[in-house]
Structure formats: C-alpha cells, structure tokens
Amino acid sequence: MKESNFQQELLSSLKRDGHASFKIPDMIRTKETRFTPTKVYDIHATINGISTGIECKMLHNKTLDNFNVNMLLSAKEKKYKLMYYEGNQYESLFKLESSGGRGFVFLNNRLDRLVNTLYIMTLQDIDIISMYNKTGMTEYIKDQCYYGTGHHKQFDLDEFYERLK
Image (tube, rainbow, N blue to C red; front, side):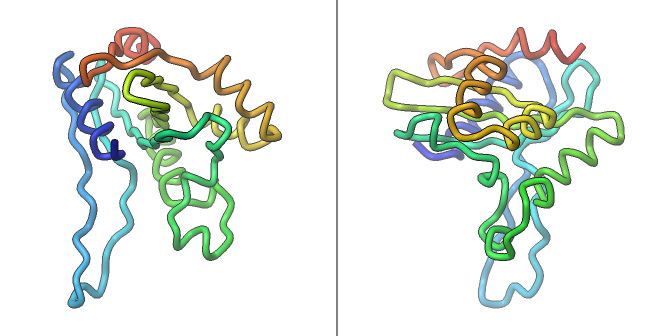
C-alpha cells in the first residue's frame, strides 16, 4: 500500500460526504526541469466552509513507534538539518491556519491488510509530540490523536467534521 492509495481513500471519503476536495499534484521532474516549486501539502478541502489543508503520512507494516515529526521534512530539508517546524509542509499548514483555515496531519498506520488505523493531528499536537521522548510520543498519539479505523477503502470522518465546526 502506497501513500497515494491512502490519499485517494481520503479524497473518496471527503467527496462521498459532499465536501469539495482535491489532491495537490506532485511536480513532474525531467532533465529539462529547472525549477520545481515545493508542494505545500497533499490535500486541500473545504469542510463546513473552512479551508482545510491535510498532509498525509503513511506507516505501512511499521509500528507507531516508527513515526517522528521529522517525517514532515523532505529529503532536501533533512539534508540541511532543518527542524520539523522549519519544513515547507509545516510552514504551509501554519500559514493556512494563520489566515483562518485549519491544518492537519493525517497519519495512516497499516500493520497489515486488516489493521488500518487513522490518527489525526493538529499542528499543536505536532508541537507537543516533538517535545516528547520516543515512548511518550507514541502514547500521546494513541491517547490524543486516535481517530478510528478505515473500512472498504474509505473512512468515517463525521466526528472530524464536527470538531471543525
């Protein structure tokens, strides 16, 4: 399972529920490409009239212990040893929130074909997680960010929509 499959499942769920949403495409890179703008985040949606940015992250066949906030950084950003809050995706979600929208990181943890767990993190959650040690971080995510499980290639996001109101 690839992250793109998770993104399509999320888009399908949002559209099923009547929300405008689209995936922000990745830039095509070729030998002739001289400039490729950095991508802000994966999905933009309007939910209950609120502009919402979603960065999708996937843990496939890994435990939740393998997640850390540096996953929000691109390879280039990691190379320059940036902190998670200096990364483009975090900054883009932060700018969206500063202008009245909402930014989230949706973490999909798939241990196997049947176990498909969704964690929804706000930027505040990401800040708190970054301060925890490895075990505390995992417990925080399980306690504060657990959302539910996915079924039939879709997610029940009703509770998430209610929190946005």
